[in-house]
Image (cartoon, rainbow, N blue to C red; front, side, top):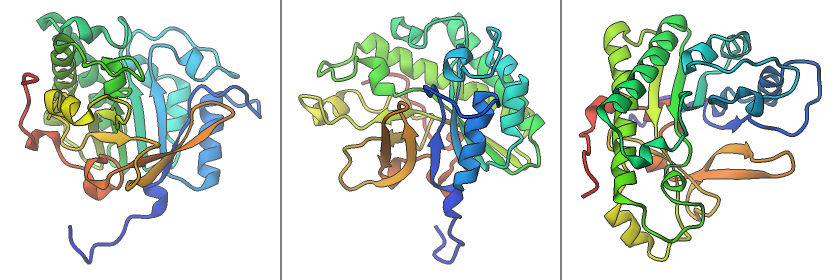
Length: 277
């Protein structure tokens, strides 16, 4: 990195998650009420949920219908309004409707891979087209990868079938994004994939777990790592996990994919892992 390059504005580095609060304050729809509060706080980085259950994620003063796709959800007035706000970065916890979030754990058939790729292609193409020239960045992300493979707190190794399924699942997502980039380009707007991983301190042998099951794909050259236990990390986001508890997310700079815009890399530069060996 150029030592003389301008440092990014802290408002474009430190952000906040807005999802599934237990109360509201105004008569605005809840998605946009929270976004407005974060803008008032000063940040221009927001993490939102783009999932099949928006009524659970953003319940107040809103009338949701069950979305048929992520693209359909992104086109709703609620999301159109929030995407029009002056945020520089949107991190979207993105899951397509039609199956359980962890369906890949039973293995990904060619048909399932193609469907996952198509879902992310359609969403990425829309974002790259609709928000061309705005300077916005959209990061499409999954929930905590290690906890998707095993139960939270588990000390067991994940099933190799599930590991391979996650590899194929993440690669299919990246393939869809790359397909959209190749078709329409990234002109004044960026769309990236991020794989979120919690730093596991509770495993019986963390070194063995990481050695046997490394990060399940290399199609994301900067996987996101989050933990409240990282002693030498740096905080990059504040998250409300419930209405009553706030925690600081911490991440090591070398693994944070969205700490600053200067750390973004095109996933096409990384080799792809095809098996957990």
